[in-house]
Image (cartoon, rainbow, N blue to C red; front, side, top):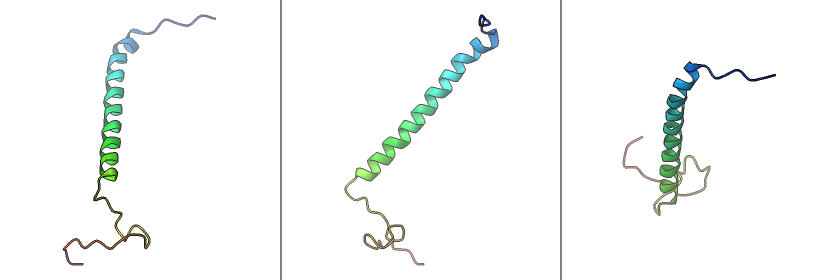
Length: 64
């Protein structure tokens, strides 16, 4: 049982698929780096409304 040769359409689309895969990987890497940078910054605090009582209440200066 032999494999059929790759169709010409697949070989033309392969470079496009590789390019899209690289861009998707770069986007995921960018989001990971930005998240890591934000979390490891010295002034990062979880808002008290999301921390379920852990942490301090942050006043944003706005009115509720």
